[in-house]
Amino acid sequence: KALKVTDHKPFFSNGDNRDLEGQLKDVFNDAQDIIERYQSTIALCKRDK
Image 1: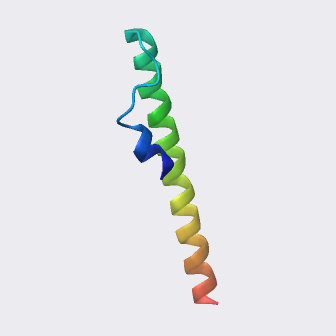
Image 2: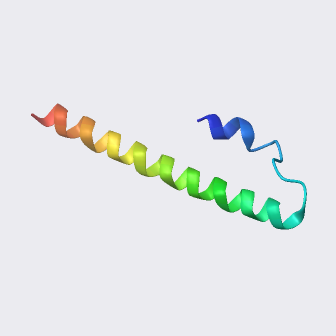
Image 3: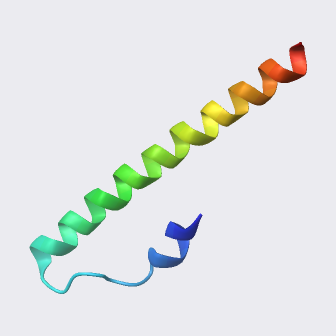
């Protein structure tokens, strides 16, 4: 969720580094999605008990 704020602020100045920044944001967003899916799965399992 903190990444949403940084999406609009460039961290690196040159083009190569901006590409790296974009790739890092993609990885962080993917990780965040995985964590959220895991948390949802755990919540459903607890609810079903």
